Length: 142
Image 1 (cartoon, rainbow, N blue to C red):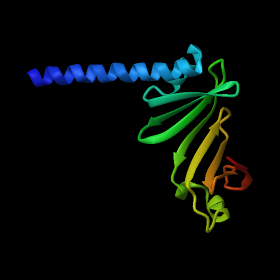
Image 2: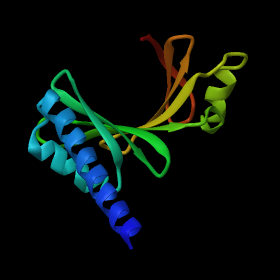
Image 3: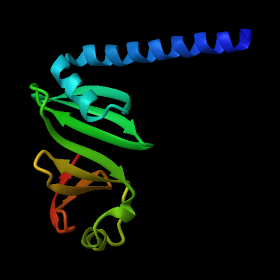
């Protein structure tokens, strides 16, 4: 019984420390409460949320269902886009063909507020952007 009580106490402490750490990360970037409330509403099961200011917006990186996500919100709490990391093999066929013989370090599916999907592939320090069908849009150096 002592062991169970000790485990419960440790779990409670760990949960409190985790919440405090998230709060500290939020305070460092001055994320408005309405932005964090919108995020919690959109992704109630998100874990390990870390915030950063991005121009006039706020970006949060988090884990959900064992996947890496990020979401960008404006100061009013409106979600502008969501990005989820995907295996390079899940890029559209046209994008895979375009990147033939290139090593993709990371790939992501990006969905904007209107539901439009684009894809991103990182290759040798450059981000290659593709439309929903995998047609090349542009590359951007990091």
